[in-house]
Image (cartoon, rainbow, N blue to C red; front, side, top):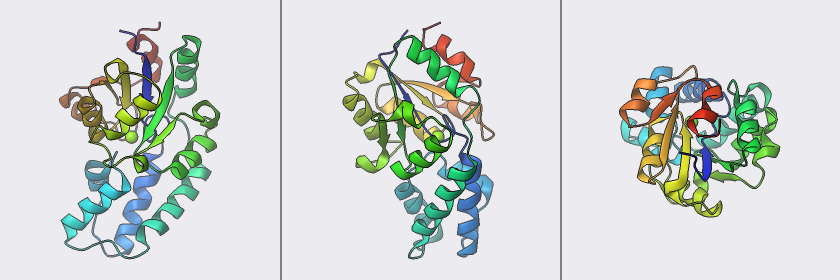
Length: 218
Ligand SMILES: [Mg+2]
């Protein structure tokens, strides 16, 4: 069924930022004396807000991240993203199809606005999302809680039951389900985990070219 609003996750859905972000996250953790592997980073932190990552890491290691850690990591990450990140394959064409069908869309990310501006700016997608960007920093609880998607839907004047969410992470799929929204699991990235997304009840797909059909506009 055709939704009233499509809510895109940003990292790993619109832009191929996860390989860059996770590589730098692990490098900074290891340098600060926290033994954490790339595989663990993808499995445990993917799709979560920085506040949520901080809490998980503190619980796991029994000590907090050092003073200034997040600021240094974010500065390094945003610079690398602004220089290197690319769109996920087929994203501009999929957005063209939504626009041609008059189907509104927005982005709702666990990342900060500065991160979205870096990645969407570098890839040329930013003009399409001006005024339609929402960040976990605007709500009390990040994904897997429904707060961010409900905030985006309210701002875009769409009822939750008529929203479709495009997500690549398990916390994101859980957040969509908790918000009462249709969850579409994009498993086209290098970190794709179609089985994990499907286990959460998402309809999975791996090519953006399939999106117009899944959304009932082609
Ligand atoms: Mg994501």
